[in-house]
Length: 85
Image 1: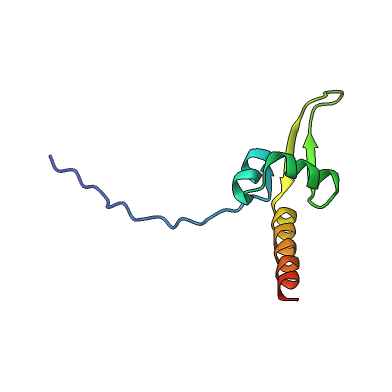
Image 2: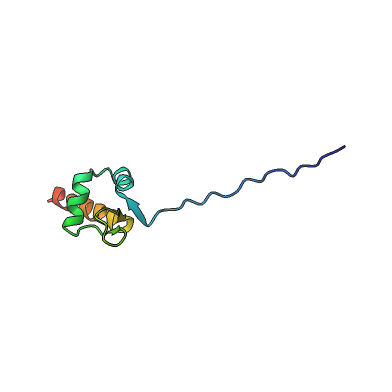
């Protein structure tokens, strides 16, 4: 008895960039430490939200990837301008 198999065609892999990152993921993606991330959140230099159930003290802190990358970009531009003077 013959069995025919269809060849597996490679599927396209489309990279997906997350819009929101948990703190460990933001640390890994940016190279910024936990303390500095929370300082930047407190100073409202990067955008974050905390998801938690009503009346709960703990939740999940999410950091906006766009605001994190924008902060890094602006910090890099400011450092470049200062070093050129």
